[in-house]
Amino acid sequence: MRLLVTYLEQLREPVVAEPSSIGRAEVGREFPARDDYLSLYRAVGAPVHWDLRLRLDPTELQQLLHSNSFVLFVLRVERRAVGLCEFEARPNNEYELVHFGVVPHVQGQGLGKFLLHRSLTVIWKMNPARVWLHTDTNDSSRAVPLYLQFGFRQFAQKFEELRD
Picture 1 (cartoon, helix red, strand yellow):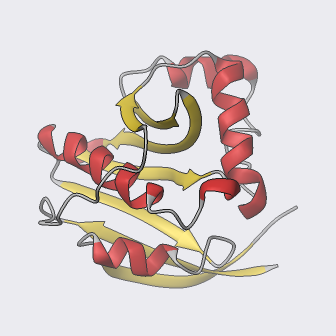
Picture 2 (picture 1 turned 90 degrees about the vertical axis):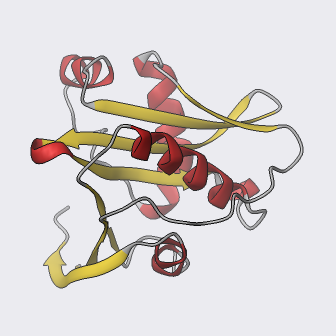
């Protein structure tokens, strides 16, 4: 399968009004156990075919979850995890937004915007030189417009072959 991959970046903290929270929504940095992380990862990522973390050896995943380069924010509604925003620190003081999304049954309620805003606010307090990400045609059609709304700008686009 051929995917169109779009690369976006922020070179400065965006000036975006914080979306109002919905109900009892909270976002916080978390350090989950491997099984808890994988459960949320699958719940959010299965509809868009995420598999990066599923391909890791359990020991590798455990090491990643406890490394200083891994930064995970979890969206909870009434204490239930319903979304994640995951960054990895890269060389040159850059942060890659590796995974971002909410479970299907809460999509369309503004919770993703709330999660992204809170997560980026904390990441920019770490004074990165750049925050970047890539998204592809498997992701939601709303992904690129949302990132652009949050001050990301496109810097590359290319087709890639998806391997089974």
